[in-house]
Image (cartoon, rainbow, N blue to C red):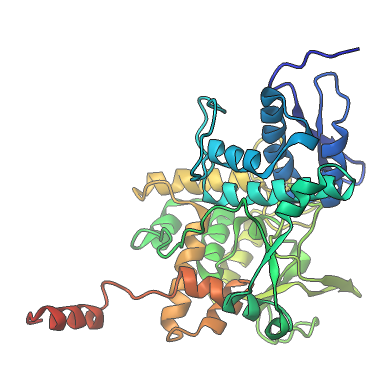
Length: 392
C-alpha cells in the first residue's frame, strides 16, 4: 500500500545498549528503520561520527522526499544544489527554500556534510544503486605538503581521495583568545575546588573539554617516575573511552591499555605544579569517598551529587563564572587557543614542541592556526614604522 509521507517525518533514533554504548539510526514515523541509512550508519557504529552523520543525513533525506528524488535518480548537480541550499557557495539555481527559519550550516558543518553525502552515495553505489553518481564522487587529487607530512610514508603518496562537494576551505588564522588576565579573574571568581581544577587544567594544559570531563583517576600520574614508564615527569594519559557514564570522550584515539592496574599509552600530557596543587585541594576537600565510578570531575550538588560531571555542566559553570568576572561568555576551547599561542611564543616558534604539548595531529594545524606574528610585538611595530618612514 502506498504511504503518504509528510516532509520531516523522518527522525534520528538513539539506541541505548546494555553495555552503556549508544548508537544512532534513522527511522520512519511509525518506528521502522530507514534501511539504506541504517546500513550506512552502521559503518560508524557507536562513534560520535555516527551521531553527527545521522543528523546531517536525516536533513538530506527529508529534502529528497520533498524533491521526490529516488536514490537512483540523484545526480551530482542535485547534491551540489543541496549543498548550496544548506549554506555552501555554489553557482547554480538552488530551487525552493529549504530549512526555513534555521541558520545555514557553518564551515565545519558544510565540510562534514560533504563527507557524509559522499560516503552515503558511495555506499549505495557499492550496493549497485546509482553507480554513475558513485563514479562522479569517487575522484582523487594530488597530495599537498601538509598531506605528506601528516601521513606515514607520505613521501610515497601519489594521490588522495577528493570530494567534489566539499566547500572552499577557509583559513582560520586568528582564533578567539581569552581576555587579558582571564585565568586569574576566573580563579578569583569560582568558589569550588573542582572548578579551580577545571580552570587551571584548561589553562596550563590546553585540554579539550571532552578530555577533561573524560579523565579517570587512573589516568593521572602526578609524581616523578610513574610506573607506566611513558614519561618521567608528572603527566596524564588522555584515553578515548566510549562508555564513560557522562558521555565525555577524548577526541584523540591513540591506543592505550591497562597493565597490572597501570594505564599506559594514550595521548600523554605534562602537567604543571599548579595543576597538581589544585588536584590535591579538590581530592581532599570535595571528592566523594566512594563514588563508584573512578572519574575525576564530579557533580557537587543536586540529586546527581557525586556522579561524573558532564561537559554541558562544565561549560555552563565556566560561562556563568566568566560573566560574573566581567569577561563576557568564555568558552573552554579559548583556553586551548591561548595555550597553543603561549607555547609557540615561549619556544621561539617551535611547531613540533607546540604540536606535542597540545596534542595536535600535525604541525600544519599549529602552523596554520597559531603561527602568526603578534601585531603588538615591538619588533613588528618597528618594522612597519620603518617601512612607513616614521620614527618609533
